[in-house]
Length: 255
Length: 230
Image (cartoon, rainbow over all chains, first blue to last red; front, side, top):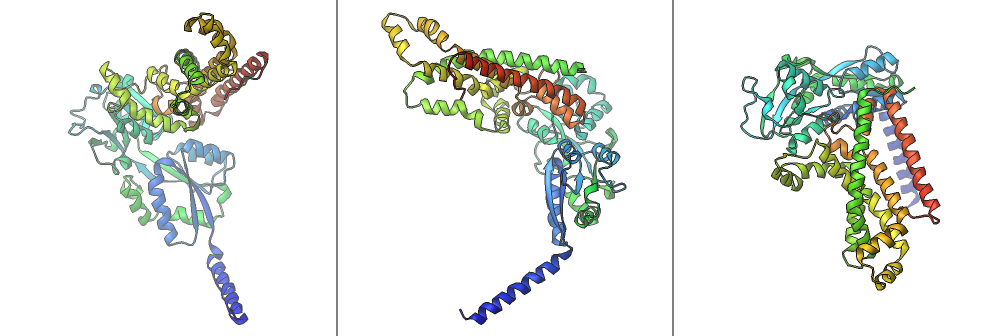
């Protein structure tokens, strides 16, 4: 290879590198902590966001309780998408989050589900005592669980069904209990049902329980991180809300 | 100093009960299994060895997930339980016992197996030529000679069941007085941000685990030679 060609190649490389750096000069990276129940919509939200932005988003999924513990111990997260309101509010109070950045990004929808076909699950004909085991998410840990308990109380069946309740650590495990038929019926989220439309279900009206609000918040360590700020802004856009709806959640726009 | 609530005490009691039942069952089924593994030269021995050691390698979620499938009405354990009119062993104390027996099996079988192997076949052969039957040989030769192995097995089987978490979380259903053991109770405390309560129970577990291991190592040292645990 003649020397001149190598020189031109070298020049090209420098030019390309310069061009790449200038494009990415404003690009930042943000690690976002996300409650595991929101895994699938969040992956799609990230992809859509990155297509129209130069910023780079990394996702870290775990239960809200674990993420909360990590954040209080200085985990390098830029924002926190919790499965409830309690933990973001608590981070706000501890001064670990930026004030006035908290908002509800999704509202969960509760569903009573059994893999058995042709069951009549409307409240008029619903007799939960005929089921040996009823799976719900742990009401102490998961908002879907406390909504399930509220629903049972609204139906005036809590007293009779209490001894038949089995508690899963989260909504994913509640689904597992019912799917493997170790429990005959269970309270899961509409987002889970949207992926596996089998059996019988009753989409529980929001009047039976207080809303299952999931809050997001910007964390103090990332108050100047443009990637995180832009991403949170994107989550409030119509485009993002449409994606969230597709996965069986409601948003402010649809309430 | 300690401010445990009734639910904590109930979880501790349930855990001790589970560990005691599981240790007893494991000693009963683990002893003949260890004896066979230590003395047999069959071609299937390594296969059984590998099967027994599986819980050491597999993540508890795998074991828990398969147990959940097996206990369901379409699974092998579920079909048997339905025979007795029980839909599923999941979410019951019996279910926890089944899961724990499988999960703690290597911790009981391996120390007994190692102790018998360390003793060698010679004393058994001599006893046989002197006319001792199998039960006699077991009681007068194996039991006294492999005693440290049996004690290590019992302590480890008990302690490992106490510390079990992943499998129970998958098949337990977190029912107070029935399946909510200490490890699950700690998990509940941590997830619901009750860190002070989590600290209390965790500290008890930590101290308990340390003294159990101290006991195991003291037993091994006193028996003259360091009996291999694994």
